[in-house]
Length: 383
Image (cartoon, rainbow, N blue to C red; front, side, top):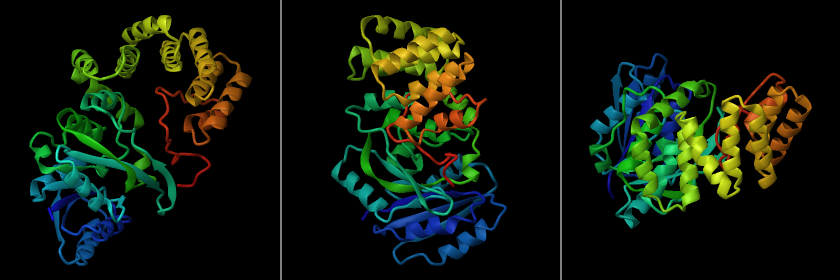
């Protein structure tokens, strides 16, 4: 049995860390070393960790290292440097493993020698451990280029900490300590550039949503992601898209969506308008509406969002953005009607819920919705 190293960064997680450690101890695969990095915790985390590690099961090894608070990227890199395993996995201190998580991922590696990284779906629980939701990763991709192109547009892996990687990956890719926000996105993007990833259906990782980890600065996260993509360069992104197996319209649409993400609105608009003249597709209209909305060309945005829902009346995001447009045009009745339609289609759609509850709100959806939506911020759901 090959050794698996589990890296757990901990910062002020006294409420959850014992349960996280226990989930490693409960693994059906037992050749594990658990490396806990106490990242300068000021609560009782360190003593709880020390006490928990006294219960290390036979056959497993556990280690704890202490550093001054430098953030999870530095902590993970330290843990990787201290590890000895052929495979490396991560676990955040407030999350959990399903009992077969490591066993199932090892089986994938054993049966697929060309695969470097395995990732799965994620189960979401609240602060008390109650089930909230099941977050699916965005499907399988036929080629490495297809996966990378889509990951440039949006994060495909619901919880990057759920990944298991072969050790050789870390000869090329480590966490970048200079990135404060979206460090996971930066890491997984570089992993996707260099290695072969395999998605396996099923929630092997349990992600906990609670007050502390819901306070992340979303705007800072988005700005950091944008900078990461801008640093790739448009020419590089074009080459990646050219290497995909997508047909012309799908490839150009994906490229335009990436351009919108990095605020190249005029470039994206030109691409989408040319496509829209040749073929009518709801997402072409949706993103043209988004561009017009961002540019404050509200009457044009209205035309494109109406066109979107005429082409596909199940597009909840288009109804939501149509409602936002009507709200800015001072047609509150039409706004409410469209927010209501959006919620009818996607009951757990947070932007539409907030828009409907708050008369002065304007929660605009920038990208098409995922098949599965997170609901942990729902005003109707206690977390």
